[in-house]
Amino acid sequence: MKGYYGVAFAFFLAFSDLFNLSLLKMLRTGEVPNKMWLALPMAVYAFQPVIFYLGLGHTTLTTLNLLWDVMSDVLVTLVGLLYFKEKLSMQKWFGVFFAFMAVIFLGSDGD
Image (cartoon, rainbow, N blue to C red; front, side):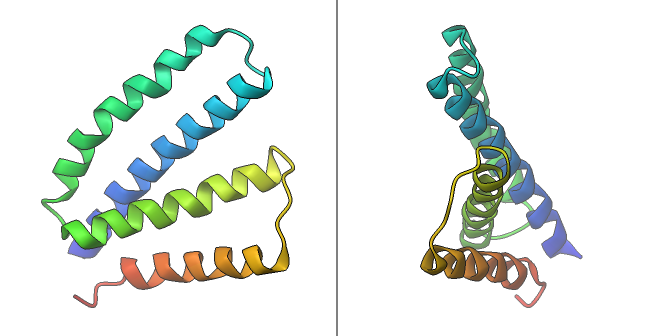
């Protein structure tokens, strides 16, 4: 069960990346025209080390970092595909599949 707390912290961190990167994309494309919103991702990024620190009480540095990175990659890719209508080659689809599998293996409690 302890491993699931690490997954929860990693998901929270990955979701904050998803929010930040989506907002940055919308600012860059003009979908959100007011550049003052750039301050919000900066504030969220400044808070991420605190969440990471708390997550280290539930899992290892290696596991938490990998989970965060891979979950963020998968979530941001899905938003890029579904919301921003970006396209991926077959080779990149394989990469997304393996990233998803990495989340499953890293989140398991087989320490």
